[in-house]
Image 1 (cartoon, rainbow, N blue to C red):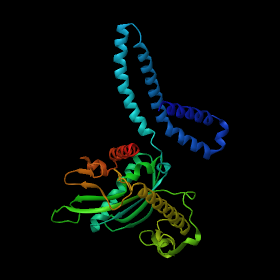
Image 2: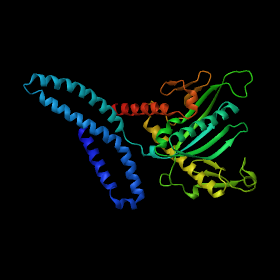
Image 3: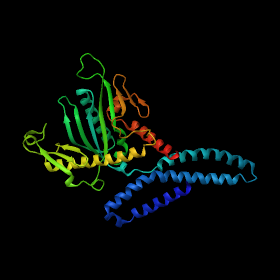
Image 4: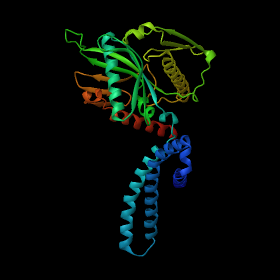
Length: 355
């Protein structure tokens, strides 16, 4: 491991020297890629330097054990025990930091929330999840934008699709894919009975044109008049777009923008992201054939989380995580849940390497 850590430090130092070159500023794309790699390697290099320093201290203490000075040898023995414990802890942390980096984790994301079983209550819960995620985005200084929505009159959504942009968005949000279940007394319930409803969340890495090639010949594009709020312009012009990807059968609609051109661009972005997600799902299923993943990030049929309002409890069933801060969670305080899911995913990856 020591040689590998030294190689990483050498590469990191070389990267810093290249970034210090004023001529690189002219190539913004290359500079951005280097800056992103620099940020990713920084915590690894910090831990690596600590590891190498402690390993060197242990070697120095081991050399003292060959001396004739009894007092010095006793001090060295005591130091070695403490240092070896610290070294083992750093090694575990480095193993996680050195796990293969998925470049998709750096992408922006498109999130699709759909009301499931439960009628109007499910649509209201879908709206609650949308607010939860937008609050979480704001807490992280991410930007979000609604791309398409189908609302009901009482403030809920049958479906809402929105993009989230920021550093490392997909790497955190991907754990939210799946079926979210809510247990509470609906606003429309007069007898006070607790109902169970559900909504599905799909988190897609935002695909760029270079990621997925879409040919015009494979697309069937229809225009129609948008429905819903928006005044006379929405109803009188055929600004809404429906794109059918003929090879896959995927259909994407978009009507939230004011012009046909903008709706087409937004719909193509969603289509590319769905195609990229489908390709990733296919690869993931092939890899997981012999081993069940500890943390599911994309299986929409799996119930991943329950929000129990009467008890103020939230439970993530994938990792048996339970907390009693439901009000905070619904206001976007989901960082601790995602952190626990991320840790479980890392542990599962480590276990797969051991196998």
